[in-house]
Image (cartoon, rainbow, N blue to C red):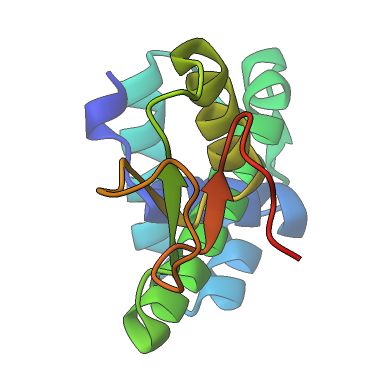
Amino acid sequence: MLDNVAINQLRAFVAVCDQGSFSGAARELRRAQSAISHAINALESAFDVELFERNTRKATLTAAGRSLLPDARAVISRTEEMKTRAASIAEAGVPQVSIAVNTYFPRTHLIECLRSLQADFPAVAIKAKNPKGPPCVSNSQYGLPLLDGCPHEQ
């Protein structure tokens, strides 16, 4: 069902809601009214629900349409965020941090820390490495040493 939904169909749906008519949505999106109608029909077919009542000149949402509208807005918003993030990545590359973890650091705590970091910084690639050498790491190749039981250098 959702495999058949395109972002342009969701944009048409939201535009019809915002403009109150198919012709208004067509003007807003700079598309033919027939393209808007086709997008709405395809969306209704994909979801197997009617989104608008078609017995008036004004587009009136059905109960299903009212229920799905916030989701459509959210998908469009997330898509815009994704496009912005992708453009940023293409321009600057994926930011990353390397974390030095010695063998004495508890693995369960390490997993919790890495999950927390990834949740707080989803756009950052995190690499955890076990460095060769003494358990205390003072090396500029690591952005964040996780050292358990080692004295921190001043």
